Amino acid sequence: MKFRKKILCIGAGYVGAPSNVMIAYKCPDYKVTVVDINAQRIAAWNSDHLPVYEPGLEELVLQTRGRNLFFSTDIEKQIAENDIIFVCVNTPTKTFGAGAGMAADLQYWEKTARQILENSKSPKIVIEKSTLPIKTALAMERILSSGKGDITFDVLSNPEFMAEGTAINDLENPDRVLIGSHETESGVAARAQLVEIYSRWVSPEKIITSNIWSAELSKLVANAFLAQRVSSINSISALCEKADADISEVARAVGTDTRIGAKFLKAGIGFGGSCFKKDILNLVYLCHSYGLPEVAAYWESVVKINEYQQERFIANVLRSMFNTLAGKKICLLGFSFKADTADTRESPAINITRMLLAEHAEVIITDPKALGNAAIDLANDKGKISFIEDPYQAAAGCHALAMMTDWDLYRKLDYRKIYKSMVKPAFIFDGRNIIDQQKCFEIGFNVFPIGKPALTHF
Ligand SMILES: NC(=O)c1ccc[n+]([C@@H]2O[C@H](COP(=O)([O-])OP(=O)(O)OC[C@H]3O[C@@H](n4cnc5c(N)ncnc54)[C@H](O)[C@@H]3O)[C@@H](O)[C@H]2O)c1
Image (tube, rainbow, N blue to C red; front, side, top):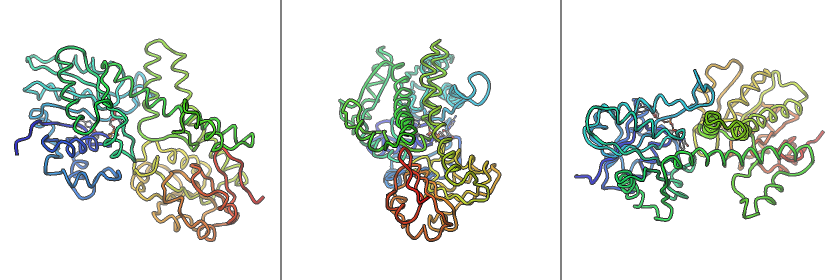
């Protein structure tokens, strides 16, 4: 079959693969190839066991793979053959040198830019989909224009706003698609090609175009605002616990104000995931580098409250369980950073496990999808940890349950059966406020919610 256009995606991770699967699904006349340096990941994308779990993703892969969607490790050949290139490589927080612990580590991204330059024999549109510091497109353009040939490259910024766990729905029905470009003739023409792709399924008023720096910055700011709401409600949950208010009631009263809105106002053990913390720290670093220490401090406090919330959670577990956890069995319900994903990157459960181990507790971890990743995350941690997929088996013989992830499954467990199998007095620390706390209290549990009075039998 002759395809109308050929699209390449570099980086077959949580963003690159699902977003390009969606393009392949919506544009059957486009050939979409996804490449990665990680051969194991590519093999998994070509197998029956996809490396990323997202509701609805497998069905789309099965419909498109081999038709107009291909996964490959031959990056150089694919760069040469394709006209439109999405760059979706990872941009983690730098762990070394200047800006360590804050700035974005751009080594993977820069390698890709150089690889594109070296292997291009025809003009390309290069699209930043990774989340990047403002002005990265300028650096990309400088690298791409450093070649001797006369090949032209147009760089666009098209940050991805999908959320893990709801990626397919978010990609199919986005709130908006943002495309940043230069206002030059070729910039506008390149932008039009990308608009054409999204127009296949996204209505025109949802496709926003902007200047390239605004697009880069908007992604960092969107994540910073989302995380800020989580930290804002969590900070108030601490106050509720002291003052006998109920965070759910406060969130409801506040969120019904249409100027504020009800979303992202659920108190819990804090945000996780690969993006929020990394992107805020990146923003903080940018503010420092532009000489704006007050702005940097404002955003940094969002991360500090997130850490405080986890420390507070463990302090509460320790205090409530008679100030000693040594030798006690604590069952963590969930390990992924949120429901409907196996992703455990920056999951609060990692820190909480480590804090429990530091108290010499025995940690039993259960999760319907994330136990493989949990075992990798904790491979170097010393202490007693076990991984049990069945929540009933995991909870049996434990002193306490600690809710880490808002999996729907945990709302529906038979807590009476679980209670019977546990050591008494039995505790539940509902780090996500998802269980029927009153019912669990009536069953016999001592229940410790977030931001609400505890329900105890003492
Ligand atoms: N995960 C999310 O929910 C999300 C949402 C929006 C934006 N983002 C951003 O998208 C980017 C990617 O995130 P992710 O979660 O998909 O990361 P990921 O780690 O899951 O995937 C990145 C992939 O890029 C590959 N890679 C790295 N260097 C490469 C190279 N030179 N050539 C080919 N492949 C290479 C890696 O092997 C990896 O498979 C990041 O900048 C992130 O901030 C992520």
